[in-house]
Image 1 (cartoon, rainbow, N blue to C red):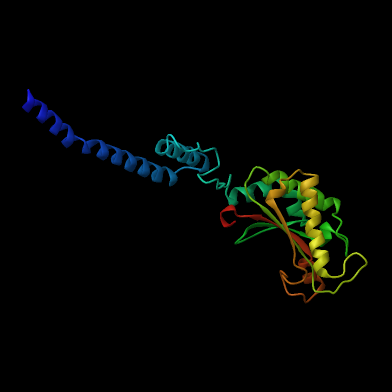
Image 2 (image 1 turned 90 degrees about the vertical axis):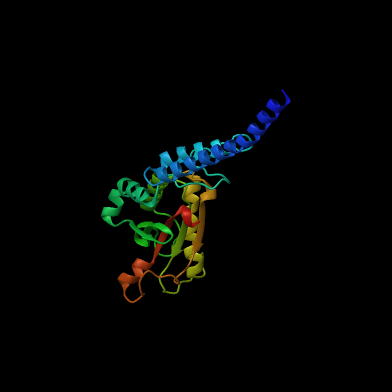
Length: 230
């Protein structure tokens, strides 16, 4: 009986490597399945695959993934910039068509530009009704995304001084803050997703050479930031 017992123990030791090999092959299969899925599915399906893989590889000590969130709390974009553009173009079609606002794009993301003529009286930081409506439409269009908003105030290079504002710096900053206040107080937009800056005349869109170009530079830009760049 002793020789038989020895052979059984030896056979068990020799076969133990099969368990590790099977685990390794399972992980490889999961990896290639995920890579294949990422190349062919949309964001919603990707999140399901990512959540399943995360839970499978971390069954005990991990926090389950929630929709739209990766391990470590990094927010995923609910939709890409193309989808955001489509929503804004749909919801703000009238404003875009009339020229009351302009939709642009740069490395930071989409930029909704509101000219002074649509937003403020000269030398004022009080939002017009037209601007309030445009800002509210934008907030509703992108509320469900994870994008932050950077509100920028810009002026032309004409020096200004008034009882309320001593310079273009102060005027441009006050205008950006006015948009932030409207978003927070009226639209209940999350303050954590907002920031404001005033650039005065120092970031013109076009050279300040004519009344028309100066009018283009007097604006408030709302930058819908590309989440991956934040």
